[in-house]
Length: 419
Image 1 (cartoon, rainbow, N blue to C red):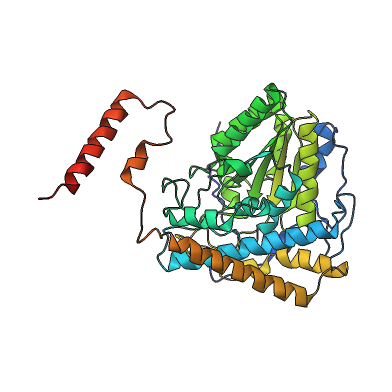
Image 2: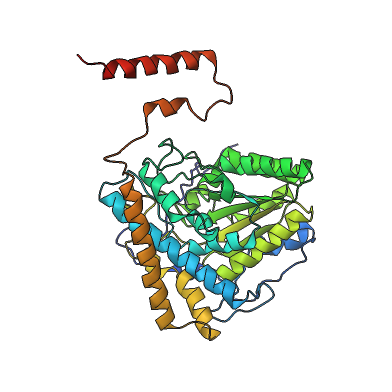
């Protein structure tokens, strides 16, 4: 059989490149309040349309609309706004510190603050979070000390991790924040396994994992979905689609063909796509998934549709692969300004209080940074004693490490001897 057309390979391309004028009018954005809200115990098949739509609560004027409105009290809304603003203030300060050479690496979550904060407020304090490296807002929302975060970034003498991690790979067991891994997607099967263990022990705690749309193309992500679906693991799998995985657009990971939330359909679990810049929508969908998991109805895959405003990291120059003003054209706006507008609409906020809070948080971050640097910075030290390499690894140290530890001690003692 002869065919007249040769085969061709499709290579996904970003819609806009440097020099282009971004135009997101191609996005099908449903109106706020339009998405239906199924019962927590609904069959996965009843949630299918939510994988292709977009759950939105806040409209352009700051009104909360529709069945997904979580009806949070105003005190909770103000706390959420504060947590988002504090997260952004921390990001701005630490980004500048990296540029000054005081630490080696930093990643900002600018434009994505509603995700970590909204989800932290929807989870219980005992639930375990297996975050990726853009969810520092989870720690902020759970009131983890700024000083501890900064000391870990500086790898100084107050760093509880003793300089063993990259500056943004946080760990805070007491805050229900599992140690970050620089190898992305690994945290997704870990979260599923933790959730399965919790269910096996007849506990009440659930797990939540975060990964990006780029790393969702890795095998770990799909392996986790299999186990979560088969064993009805009490876990929330959060896929943050911020349009860019370093320098490759979301189309390279499969977003050109369908939504990432729709991946859940083949596994028989609910998949929900939500406006990631709408704190109310993020909170509501996360609470729905948490209630479902805690009621033994199994996992949920949430696609958080957002935009990465900042560079991928301090090692990245986004002007090389996307228009410099692309973030300004993103139609779902700034999550902080949107929640601020909602509170103003309710008569519970105003410009004077917002300006005062901004100044208060800036000063809080500045003061914490001054104290953190007093314990050392990555570039100048003081650094942890090399002997700490033997600590916190084994419950009972094996013989060969004890020998090496003793050899190091003899070497250090010899260095101190005169002559």
